[in-house]
Length: 278
Ligand code: C2E
Ligand code: CA
Ligand code: CA
Ligand code: CA
Image (cartoon, rainbow, N blue to C red; front, side, top):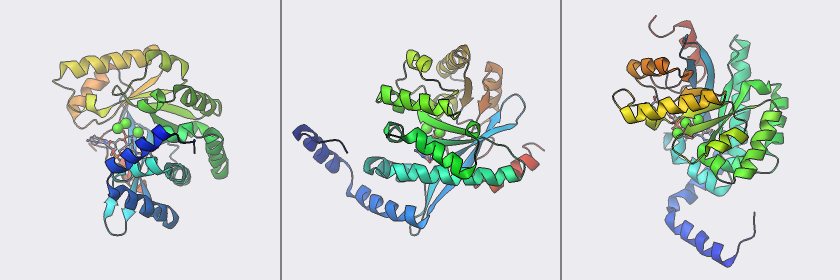
């Protein structure tokens, strides 16, 4: 915890007013949820456009709330980020994801797993070493772990974030820039931060066919990514038309409801056994 000056106290109070009292309840409950193992991970495949092969799966957290049912991340992640619970939450997600990865590896699928990390994780001292510790604990290969960092996280405390990314990649862990296009990543940052992949935000992708402006943006992001030697994934692909447009534009991978919704991992094996259209 940093020290708090008079000016910060005012901000802090204003924050409390701005956030519904509801968040405080969520925070208290989430603490118990972590202890009681009420969180679950759903996975969404990432598919290579050239041949429909699954090139990885992304872990997306949900909360199986005893009263409110299955909650989406938007309903509790803000409370976690605000309270510092995001650190144990990310550790839980990493543990669960690495354990699940061992499960599908045992069934013959060497899928890399992608985990979303927040700016706060990246800025925490010792985060890369903590991830390395979890990998060792699970006997997992660093090259089969991809951490997705939003553009906004890279734009925050750019120096701390860049250092963390350097340390992670030195450990052999992959890093992707998530939600690309809606934040403020400068091009020079992409040059200095050694990321492996760019994920184009779904807001540019979903209605892409018939939207010349988004087409222009997506084309230039693909060119930019390839110019820097990075892979590019389009999120939010929902229709065959968008899929075809992206394949034509040279996009590497795609994710979206067209291929599969996020789901418990054993269901993904059905996708492999019964590919779409067969
Ligand atoms: P994201 O990382 O951009 O994940 C993609 C989101 O888009 C997911 O929402 C996914 O269910 C949804 N999605 C995937 N394909 C489609 C599609 O074709 N159409 C539409 N309309 N939506 C699609 P979800 O699971 O609600 O997650 C929302 C966000 O919460 C994620 O956005 C990510 O930023 C965050 N998040 C999820 N899990 C974690 C986690 O374990 N840790 C952290 N720090 N953040 C997480
Ligand atoms: Ca993501
Ligand atoms: Ca995203
Ligand atoms: Ca997003």
